[in-house]
Image 1 (spheres, one colour):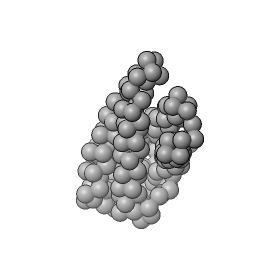
Image 2: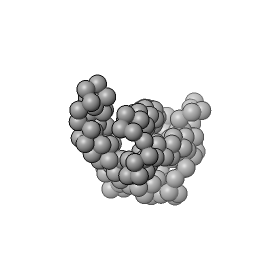
Image 3: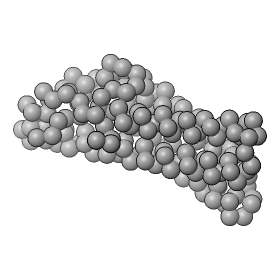
Image 4: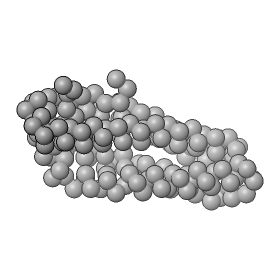
Length: 171
């Protein structure tokens, strides 16, 4: 039987934490901001129009990312006892660092005028592609958590609750 994502104590801390709800709200908000931003970037790349709107959307997406990363680290501390790289979310956190690095590189390039506008947009799209991979990792973990909860509800409780968290993402 597969190892569970959460121990019983971790699940209880997850369910009691206000940061769980905050993450649940911020994740779709960030996704929506990303979709709007991709549309604005595409508009600029295809027509040459809307550079200011595209740049503002990327900055908003970046600060949304920083917010979800900070609150996610707090959530991880409450649930797993460490701010980042808990075994259950190790690979998700590693990819999150790449996402943060690319978004931060965009900000540096933008504010210090290190790249031409089209190159900036390509950098933002690379950051967004990495974000999409990271979002898929977290959706997979959400599915694993639901499957674990379902198995526990149907009598698989003993095996799942005694398990230690698994390393996430790229096995």
